[in-house]
Length: 405
Ligand code: HEM
Image 1 (cartoon, rainbow, N blue to C red):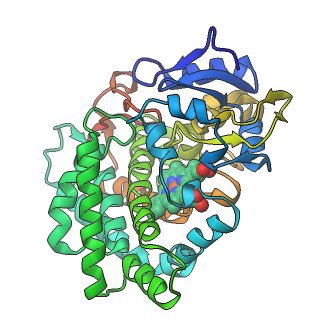
Image 2 (image 1 turned 60 degrees about the horizontal axis):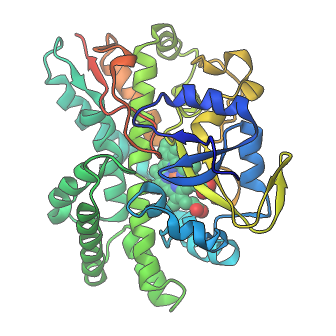
């Protein structure tokens, strides 16, 4: 990688999809600067897939060139992710050891059992929405997309009622994960401390939740999961299980209220709501740029020579708009597209653990919303909405709509 004439990825000031169009045309792997860090950007679908499945591309930060790693600015989204000690950054046997205890919690059987709870939480939010005057703009990110995944993951993890309010305050403030103005290290620290306290309390009062499952596993199968690992796992689930799904539901509402012909396909039953979920994941991936992979050795990927230790950034939102994969209509939101086959949940051993949960939440939320408010309409044009100021998330800060009669 050379340092001259690098493209700078700056979600705060530029148009994500326009940047991505430009980068895809520039080559399979393009040298860019993201949050001050020089990385290769994998923006094409085929290249991203090749990187995610390449045996010489590792998630293990120890493969990142030490000097480059030391020079990375602290406090950035990249810094937070690479210093995470959860399964996200583990490899091989270590990765399996950390991920395996959680797979049962996301099994089809457990999710089926969870569905009524998600429906009930959704119905409560819809009831609240019905209280707004029909001609007053309502921010769907704040009032609907945001609280649902938070309440679902709090329930699964087992956050006691006594802590809900404080947890809400903290998550409200850190919801702009990945560099929003409110995402301060202090608030993150407070969230960290609170989750630690909740885990400690759960030791004395077991329940039917993930914290209890992991504590029991640790006690039954001593040493299999250290205390720090248990903590990192719960924190990862809480954060990964929340903001991404908020973006998915927000982006789906934004896409649909601006495409009444597509809504008709849903309400007439021609397309299932799951089609809207999948097409939104492709068209407006909740994650713009996410974790890096590091070259274990000098290696060639899609004809580009990488040196050992160089990092590659996964560009999910870009892969979803790649005309090589989706043809001329890549930029069109089309619920009849089949198959969608997006990479927005990743691919391979790190494939998103929570994907079935995110899909279920979004499907329940969207079908209930469009059934309750068939006249729902945008209260602002898409180009008027400010994007999230983060490298990770791809969404807008607000999603104002008129709910209608
Ligand atoms: C991993 C996306 C929702 C938990 C990932 C990865 C992606 C992703 C792209 C792979 C990272 C990589 O390859 O390195 C998303 C999106 C979501 C979503 C777009 C919502 C629309 C959730 C939910 C949960 C969750 C609801 C849990 C409740 C995880 C975990 C991992 C992960 C634990 C790490 C898996 C591993 O490293 O083995 N997610 N996610 N995610 N996700 Fe999600």
